[in-house]
Length: 167
Image 1 (cartoon, rainbow, N blue to C red):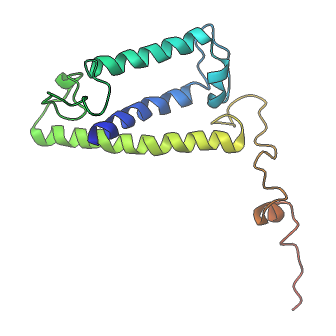
Image 2 (image 1 turned 60 degrees about the vertical axis):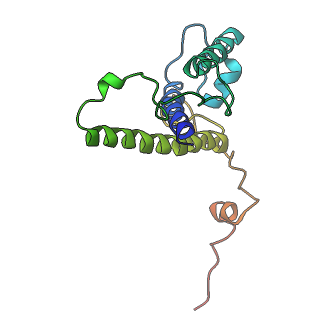
Image 3 (image 1 turned 30 degrees about the vertical axis):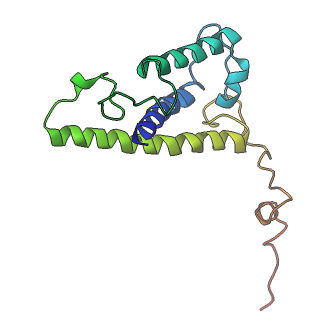
């Protein structure tokens, strides 16, 4: 389970950066899209195929071709999440290394929650993650769907809360 938690945390840390950067940075040949959730549909098929191939290659090479949960950890004596990549950067005492690994784990947990929040933000407002930055974007403009269907919508539309209470 720790292997999975570390891997998902690392992927989400990268995904959070990519989700935010996508709104402001566009690769050559790609269509600029302010909403990161819509970028998948505007990307060229060759780009998406390359991304899928690259992800599959990394997964298969990390586990030496063993892809199922039953054989992924057979004949291995490595620690979960240790792929001999960047080990030379971990310097210091055992306690310092333990603290760095703990920070990575906690930041990965935070990134998993943050990525879910960013995706849900884009789904709710039906627009970009940072709606104040792009030129001319006016905000959700009624995309919340709460205008007449809830107490909150009735309050914000002035239908409730304007009553005069007699003394």
